[in-house]
Image 1 (cartoon, chains in turn red, purple):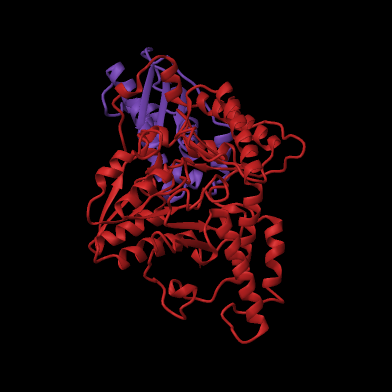
Image 2: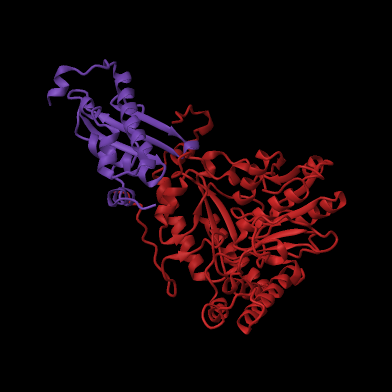
Length: 417
Length: 139
């Protein structure tokens, strides 16, 4: 009797389940938690309270965090606005710029593999009279700068293109994009959630005007994010989307989440100190995982550019094996699938499809998101486990058998259902 | 998502995995689904020409755990039945047995389709009429 149940040995020092989905969220670094703790209890003041020490203490902590974040991305403290997270940051940036510059133009340029927080915000603006161009990406996941040049016209007010993709880890040429925007007098916003603290990112060198950042992707807390808004050359103006007490220089009202902000600041400080060694460490683990998988399995390939890529990201297609069944077999490893077999539409990842992958291959894809706390022993276990399950599922796969017999699957008349 | 124990059991220990000689007149092959939909099932039966009893059933499935379980269960259920008896199996029986959630009902539909396609192929090969012979149903 054939069996899919895995018998891969668990190496010493590895405890299950293994978390390898760090693009979704990352564990809180204990040093971050330690920094946050006093601000839940003894130092509970409202940072906007101006007439007692409780308020001053909170305000001081917030300003320190602002400095820490600014330093990581090459900004100044006054250019950092706190938000509830990157979804809010993206909404505030895009809607706020669109509203503020409505008289100058109504055209926005983005690209197809953006996060939903950007795409759906742009879609909403389309309902309000804005025109949005969604640039395609090449097979490696990068946009073509010539496409961007051609898309710009005298009504273009904003270009919003992510720095690093959350599914395939691909790095867009933001420095060139920003340069092009500045030449044309167009504001450049980038969703920097995945790149901040992981790979070099500097708002001055990279010609970025507005950037979204999240706490929980960089070993900080959930529910806190930031928006960088350039103050000079050019000074970017954003219309507030939340009205109230006029916090954050009127751009984002609401009492500041002091413990969260302290955590985000500390997370940025650690990232800045450790990014170089951490990136090398993660790249080594990622390449090790890739090499192990490639040496044992046929019909697998990496999605997106390996050259322009976050060090901790590996997105692979295991052709002729369905993604969800693969996840089921490696259920002691937390990763993500490009398959959406459970969704009502049965639509696989729009990011992978944008690269030109067929639905069948997109269904067969797994995203490995390596992070600060992953170890080499974990990578070895995950590699062994994935190899074991893929081999077993291929014994079960009619497609793999047919391809091995030399049958061209594209010539078969499938009964789509 | 959480899978029922029975789905997990079929996934971990799929029954009747394999391939029959599709050129044999005693063998019927059903290939249903499509790679771009994320599931393809191939179900094969070997039918005794005298008794019309399905003596052997094999499957291979590309698909999620529920699709694998549905086809594995289907081979278990049709083995030992006459072809006409096998046609009485409904996708709802599979849904019930495996406690499939609503989003996975299409897996059971595909398994029923696979049974029908395999039997249809066998009938075509053997010139058997689509209506059930009186003797076959008696068992």
